[in-house]
Each structure stands twice: as C-alpha cells, then as structure tokens.
Length: 318
Length: 305
Image 1: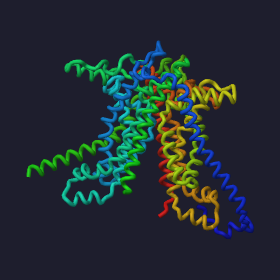
Image 2: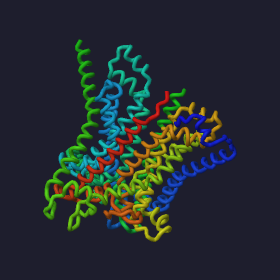
Image 3: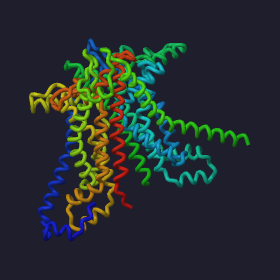
Image 4: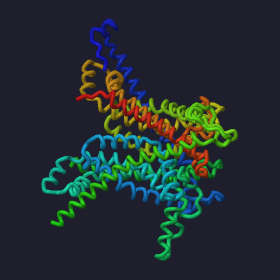
C-alpha cells in the first residue's frame, strides 16, 4: 500500500475528476478479460479431453484391458501387464506410505514440542514436496535398485513412490489433525486417557476424513507418476504379469511373492509414454486408449476424495 | 501394577515409532544429497574416455553436451538453457491465465462459480504430465503450431512450454487465490467507500497487498516447470542444443535424465555418472527457487491483524 498523502496526490493530478462512467467501463472490460483468461484453462481441459476421447475410443474394449502388451501385434495389444503392475505398485506404496505418513503427522502435531528441530522438519518437508519427481527416481535407482539390490522390480518402484508421496501425505494429515478442536483432546485427558489413547480413539477418528482425502489425492498423483518409474527401470513390454500365474500350491506362494516384488514390471503411465513415442498411428490410438483408462481411474479417485470432503463438511455443519 | 507398567512401555514404543516416521523425511533429504554428491564426485575426478578430466567450470560453462558421441563433450549449458527457456516460456501462459483466474475467482465470481471452478482446476492439476506430453505432441504441435508456421519441428520447445504452462495454471491460481483471500475485507471496503471501482480495488489495493504471495506463486510454478519431466520429454524431444529458437527440438535436464536412465546404462560408467551430476544440478536449482519463494513469503508478507 502506498502511503501518499491526499494533498500530494491532488498536486499530481490537479483537480479530481470522478469520470465514474469511464472507470466503470474499464472495470467491466477488465472483468471480461479476467473471465476470458479463466476460460482458457477450461478450454484447454475440454480440448484435451475431446481430443483424447476421439483418438482413443476406437481401441477401447474388454480385450484392451485383458490382453498383454505386445510390440509385434499392436492390434491385439492391451493393458493387462501394466494395469496389474500399477495395481501392485500403488497397493504396496499405500501399504508403506500411509502408516509412516500419518505417523509422522501425528508425531509432529500431537507429540512433538515446538522447537528448532520440529521447525526444521517442517521446512524440510515443504522442500521435499518441491523436489522434482525424477530426483526421487535417481534416489531410488541408487539406493533401492543398486545399493540394496532389489533390482528393477515392483518393490524398488513402490519404495521410491513411497518417498515421493510421503511429504504430501504428512502435510495433508497435519492440516487435518490441526483442525481437530483442542477441547476434544482435553476432554480425553481429563478422564485419564493416555496420549496414545487420546490420539487413537478421539483425534484420529475426528481427523480421518481430511486424512483420507489427502491420502487419496497423493496416491492418485503417484498413479500418474512416470518419470521416477522410468529411471527405476519400468519397462513397457513385459510379457508376464507380476509373479506370473497365481500359485496353485501353498509352497508356490513364496516364489510367487518374490516374483511379484523383484521381477521387471510395467505400469500404466509408462505404457502410455512408450506408446506415445512410437510413430505409427495405431500406437498413438493405443496411447490415447491407455490415457482414457488412466484418467478414468484418476477421476474416480478424485470423485471419491471430493465425496468424502462434501460428506465431512455437511456433517460438521449439522 | 504390571498393567500400568505395560501401558507405559506401549506408550513409549509408540512414541519412538512415530518419531522415527517423522525422522524419515530428514533421512530422505540426506539420502538425496548423499547419493547425488557421491555419484557426482567421480565424474569430476576420473578422466573421461579421451583421457582428460572434466572440470566443474567446463561442466557449468561448456556449450556442447554430447556424452554419447565422440568426441564427448560435457557442457551442461544447452540443457540448462532449454530448461529455463521452456520454464520461463511456460510462465508466459501460466502467469496471465493463473493470475486472472485468481482475480476473477476471489474478486468477481459468485459462490456457485467458485464451487464449479475449483474442481476443474483440481482436475487440471491432477492430470499426469505424460498425458500433457501426448497432448502437446499430437494435438498442439500439428494442429496449432504447424498451422501457424511451417518451421515448427515435430518436437519443439514451444509446445512443451505451452503444455507446461497449462499444467502449472492451478499452482498459480490456487496460491494467488489464497493470497488474495488473506487480504482483509476492511481494506477493500475502505477503498469502495472512497468510490473506487472493482478494477481499482483489485489492481491497486488487493494485488499490491498480496504481492509477496503472487511472487512466491510464480516462483513455485517455475520450480515445478523446471522439474517437469514427461511433458517436456515427449514434446521437446532430445536434441541438446543451445538455441533460443522455440520451433526447434531441445533437451532439458529432466529429459536427459529420463532418456539416459530408461536405457540400460552400466553402473559406474561416465554416462551413468552424468545422470547424477545433472540430477544434482537440477536439485540445486529447484531447491534454490523454492527457498527464495519461501523467503519472499516470510520476509515480505503484509500482516494484518
């Protein structure tokens, strides 16, 4: 805000002429320009959707979902391997990232006293959230693939994605925990609950909708992540689904799980990337079809998150 | 008595577990720094194929990047210039569109438009970057750019900048929207009482008051654009060249890493080391931009009580 005194301002412009009509007209035009620019974003979204539906709808079929990817016969190529790869990848990521992320948020919000250290952790989390995803890929390549020797498998990919989504989950969960009223905790302490009992039975349930929304949104981001998986070494043309066929005997379970965790894998966005790079029209259509499947998954996850949020808000008001 | 003791032990164990979870974020940061640095050091200390050592100066200021060809040359400037050309080009789209969207949403739009617009922006932010890459390669380049000018290549920097700009609109609009809404109502009402129009209130009261937030939003969008990988890899291709001609293919730092790492590179080779050197450069640049953004937010925020 400038602090020019009225006399100085008058001295500059001479006598004040309102010209309200002109100024209102300018204001009206400005509003129009703002609206127009806002619509550019909407137009881009519509153009993207329409273009992808138009080029991808021709390949969509049940076979497209169940056939394995094939470079030699693109006509019968499908998403079986990459869909299963993504499913395993995201389940494992959620399995690792959710307890750790929520745990870290609970620690920072409920346990830790505010001091230099927690402040440092907070700044560090914000910075980690800004680290490009491909850098996490490099970290995963060096630590999980090479150093720990997990190879270019689903385990290495899931651990890399875990590190990638952790900051987002922690930040979102902290916000949800901070929104829980203090009185709830004090009431629990007053009847003799320990700190963990208070958190477990009162604070966490109250913050659950917010935490769930954060988790779903961060996992949907992980589903679309391509760059770190490329660096880790996800391949587009993997002939078998993770682990191969389901084990028929009890003794077959251990090698099967090993196969799932350590054998090479594909994932939906990696498949999209690989088909997009290929020059033929058929691959272009396959890529668009795969994008449609990917977007359907992501949009339904977004809808679930929005639903939870709306339900939570309606409950809070009543 | 034992029940109480047991409960105490359980409480203690949970406390330790939760603290370990929080500590993991610091371990991650350390892990990133340690791996990037330890794998980068050999790149500068061991001689490359033609026998000479690449010095840091040669790396930072060299104008040719040809690690896979003979003669090898390791000047990172072409990658950096492409990264910033596309990054700053994307701001030409994301700043006006994002800023206008934020002004419109916070100052003009009625509640129901906001309710409608927020999910659209969220969807725009949630679309994976590989999808934007596809859109740039098969829609924007052939249908928009090449119909304007024949000089556009199949891979070009302009299409990459356009889609990265679209991708980062939600970053700018939501951060600016937050900044505008943090400006107290009383400030606007005081201006309206002096018979200022909505335009004057938006541009001369709200915008200056929220300026630190706007700058931070622009920087964070730039950091995202610099770290963006898949859209630029698909749209801009993989020709590392030092040029300002946006109709040509160029390779950003992220695109180089993605290109090299997705092939099979033997560990310990010079090419393998370049992944980490370029990764370290990228990490330091984005970290720098993020820190400056946070500094601006903290130093120049106007606090109204």
